Image 1: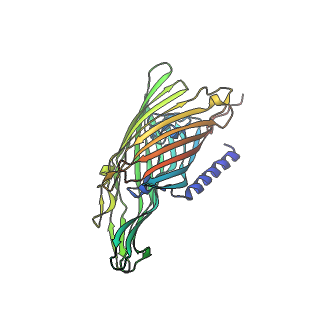
Image 2: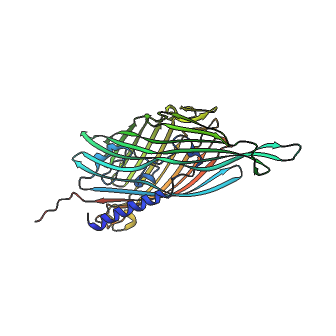
Length: 435
């Protein structure tokens, strides 16, 4: 790889990290539950296909969602991948509507083959994000003699998120069977605040003490994801690949702290050791490939959040419990069409992608199940070199999503995302021969 491309790689990494540093990646009020808004773990090549990944294995892509795929990385390649997202979100509740914008880093990773049938990958990807600021006001009544109107406002703010870095291996030990594992480290901060203020005719009253609560934690732990893939040739030009993954759930060895105090009053502090759990998760999927033109995939994943404990305040008690959490299931489907990889016409070398997904909530809100998430995606994979070496790709995708809650009293969230990723594929390990 020449010096100019190395400089470009470094510049892209710094630009992506700078963009991510400008925001926590979420404006959603639903990020106040659990570990926050869960991040989409897909990458540039499959973001436009609804995130399907379990059965995909290609020599020119890194599929970190199933580490067994690393065994299929091309022996001559070093692959470097980076992606960012620009999002516009709209939140509606009753007759009110608010828009919010942010930019986030999606992932940075790299991969290459260590030996025949043995691939390696490493990288960084956010796991969840916390970022919200909203309030609700309630009318308490009027004083008969003075005519004053009493109200109170609860203000909710939160910030933080969980990040993950990983190293992974994929191995093809026998026949077509591949197995793999990602060994990750997760870390981040978790902060939630509630401030209650009383008003008399719109003026803060001193006769009633406002209540303030805060929960914070510094989280760090490990994360292990295991994957398997098995391709089955079902015809001269067709291959059906089955894939499955399993993520090990465990207790996170990090405490959570709770502070409660009233205006001009004492502060109460409570601490729960090992207050969080990372849920067990597993998934399975199929991917069908026809020649070098069609790829179609279907995935189903399941996360056992209903068994995971999180710190909560219930009946003025600070506890770590799985109450108010639900198991989450996600179904994704997607397809890619490449008309002709080595065509002289550029548009026939473009990869056209579409997809959709549906996910159930992993938390309850005021006794109601949280919002279900629906997404529709589309995009392109644009070769950024010539027809003889179209290994590097600019991935662009558009994602429309909706969080629709079954209870009319809950907030409805709609968002539109533009995802941009660049996959650099360099022939680092090619051996040149002199005739």
